[in-house]
Amino acid sequence: VLSGSALAHVRVKRNAVSEVIFDTAKLTVTEVHIADRHGGAKRPASFSLGSAHDAYGRPLRVVLPEDLRASGTELQVEIIYETAPGDECTAVQWLPPEQTAGKLHPYLFTQCQST
Image (tube, rainbow, N blue to C red):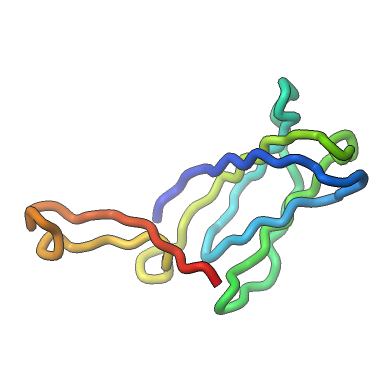
C-alpha cells in the first residue's frame, strides 16, 4: 500500500457549480481539502466515492463550498489517498530485480490505461 496526496488546480467555469468529479480506481480516499488558489485558508471538504465500475473505476465527488462556486474562482483541491494492496492496485506495479537492467533492485512504475 502506498499513501500520498494529489493537488489539483481547478477553475470554476460557470456560476453555481456545486461539485468537482475526479476519476479514481481502487483508491481509499481519507481526506479532501479545498482552498481558494489565491491565498484562501485550506479547509476540509465534503466528498463521496460513487459505485465502482470494472472499466471506469469510481467517481470521487468533492462538494464546493458556497463561497467558492462563482464563475472564474480558482481552487486548489488536495486529495489524500492510499492505494489498494498488492495485486488489487492496477496503476502501481513493481518489476522484480530479475526483470531490470542491473538485476539487483526492483523497479516501481505507474501506468493506468485510459478508457
